[in-house]
Image 1 (cartoon, rainbow, N blue to C red):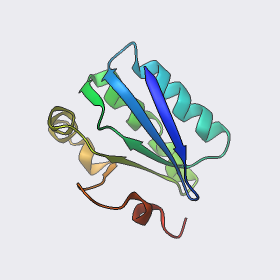
Image 2 (image 1 turned 90 degrees about the vertical axis):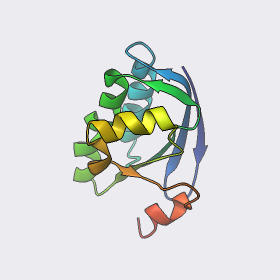
Image 3 (image 1 turned 120 degrees about the vertical axis):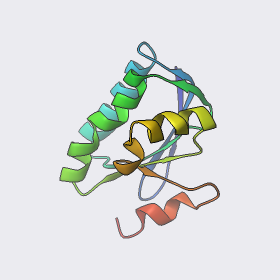
Image 4 (image 1 turned 60 degrees about the horizontal axis):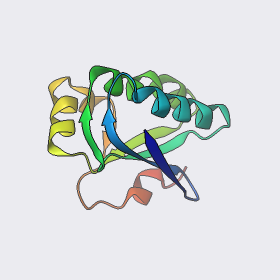
Length: 113
């Protein structure tokens, strides 16, 4: 899976591309773990180019929430496709992870960080 990155002042944005399934989710999981290990606790993931997400893909986001919360960090997801958003909503994960509304400025989620 290709994952582009963009470093911002208060956070880093990740842009995964393709299907986020059992095989490809390993790449995203490892990258997020690396960022956390380096002390990056504010992470934005733009999912506009993710066409499919499996339970393993969903698990990537859930698995890092505790450590981000422990360090007063946050994960914000944006630009979910209809099918990806459906998967998050179906499992109630939209209650655990911040999902930016369409057109919202991501920087606002990381103010005062």
